[in-house]
Amino acid sequence: MRDSKTSAKENRPKNHGEHMPRILAHFVAPAGISVCLIALAVPAGVHAQSVVAKVYKTNCVLCHAADGSGNSTSGKALGAKDLASSEVQKKPDAELTEVIAKGKGKMPAFGAKLKPDDIKQLVAYIRAMPKK
Image 1 (tube, rainbow, N blue to C red):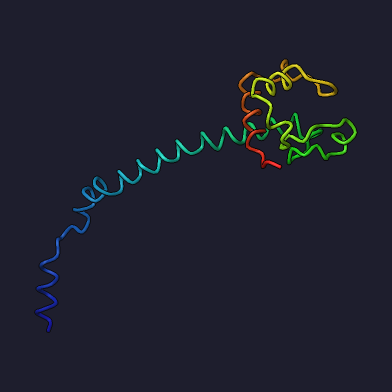
Image 2 (image 1 turned 180 degrees about the horizontal axis):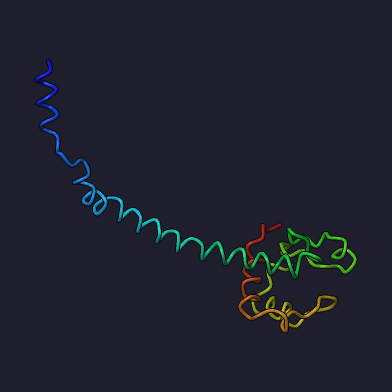
């Protein structure tokens, strides 16, 4: 019985790690590269979404509320539009961009405060609100 154990041990490679470089080169490295590429691609969209959400929260929530309804205290007092309403949603992007940039009625102008790209993203953010 001892001989069979001895012969099994003798058949094993003396250096158990001799195959590690091949394993790393063929399996671990490509997987690591794939994970890195995915990690680089995903945050761009997430980051863009969080930036526009932050712009909306900073500049619009006071009157339009977090859901765009205009049901905040200030929004009710000023008659802020419900951004998800068909009245707002049917307006062309250019008109929404102009209202955000130049203001309209009691809504202040944000053109001096926001970059054109921020305004464009706000329009897309408004378009993505659930329709009513």
